[in-house]
Amino acid sequence: MRERAYSYIQRQIASGALKPDVPISELVLAKELKMSRTPIREALGQLVAEGLLDQSPNRGTVVVQLGRQDIIDLYELREALEVYSARKDAQSSLRPIDLQRWQDLSDEIRNLKNELEKSGKVALNADQMHRFVTSDLSFHNMLMRMAVNGRMLKVVNETRLLIRIFAIRRPGYNPATLERIHQQHDAIIQAVTGHDPELATQLLADHIRTSLKESLDAYDLWEQETSLRKNIPTFFGPTHD
Amino acid sequence: MRERAYSYIQRQIASGALKPDVPISELVLAKELKMSRTPIREALGQLVAEGLLDQSPNRGTVVVQLGRQDIIDLYELREALEVYSARKDAQSSLRPIDLQRWQDLSDEIRNLKNELEKSGKVALNADQMHRFVTSDLSFHNMLMRMAVNGRMLKVVNETRLLIRIFAIRRPGYNPATLERIHQQHDAIIQAVTGHDPELATQLLADHIRTSLKESLDAYDLWEQETSLRKNIPTFFGPTHD
DNA sequence: AAAACACAATATGTATACATGGTGTTGACA
DNA sequence: TGTCAACACCATGTATACATATTGTGTTTT
Image (tube, rainbow over the protein chains, first blue to last red):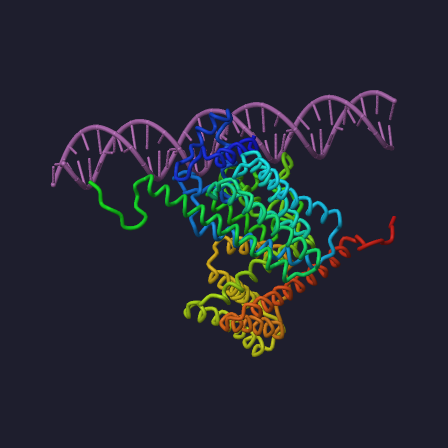
């Protein structure tokens, strides 16, 4: 039951049903899931430990509100760990079957780009976006799985979960972006299979930094919009009334 | 109360009172701490999330048993994150007050070495060992704090906690080891203040890998001893009775 | 009219009671 | 005597009851 509560609450957070700064009532969740508060509390505790929720003693639990610096921190964490793994991969002799699967995951991005171009649309639809996210995540997962270290993989997965949930929803990608991502992935594969650690680390660092920049741009845009919507001026605004 | 239970259980693990593979009874802990099972369970949950305990559904909670590969994984995690931070430090302009404090922490190690040489003993006593651990931990903490990223610091601290608790107790350091550590720390400071990212990363990676090697040697020694003590031969041994 | 204090309602934190599953022991049967 | 089965006890997992703290609202006082 704790597991049911856990995945339910996580979905509620991801879907935006639970918003930051709004206290989460344990009783409400308990009624919705038709269970007592106990498993709810355990699930909340786990989510707090994973960094999705924030708890103040005697003051309840709220969804964390990630700021600009948090996004930077999360991407830096990813960069440090993935770059380390990429270097290790490039210095090891990897199993051909893994490399084949890795290449397939990269190709999937290009397939999506081709589909998108044929359809004539400017951006991926929801289903295609889901396929993209899955492929991209698997690509980076494979990068780290080949480096063996399970603990690193766990940390990176938690980091990516935070980014995916809280990083503002980007618009569906356009063909040019997909092409860039595919080329970067392919270049990384080349560098790793070619046993060039320096190149592999450089390429992966660039790749992740590009993602960070996109996320920050989306964040800045979103922050600007919400500031305007709430009539809260960004800095010194007009005094009204 | 959950906090009291948490620190109590953590101390019990660190002191070895709770041994791996021995089920932890919630009732016993509750009686010892004179509280109900509820806060105990919350504390256990937190320790599970931090990786100190392992939980099997309906089969209880046990202290994790780290193997050889786990030690390698933990040190790799530290290396990836600390090396990243060191590179970032070397590329930033750091506050002189931080650098001063950093240098002081490094000097503390040399002070300990001098004390040890004067005393004529071959290894640090318990109190000196505590001072060493504190200085060393603060040195690495400062390295990461200057790189700002709070999430990285949190992950590294949890990693170091696991290492400190489960890595087999090494014998107290001798003067030569202390001198080596001090020199490595100083060299790292020099590289960072000299804005030489490549050198800083190289030195820190070497430093951490040396620690890993020491830990592994201690682990292998310990495993060999316990195998003998239990009359369990390391590989193919004589069949008795 | 505004601020401060008091009281009530609600939510968290803790304790206890209950159900369910697993393990260990004992007894019976082969 | 060995093995299998049944029962009992104790563990975890869940529900509920209770205490305490915080917050909001209303009234009173300045």
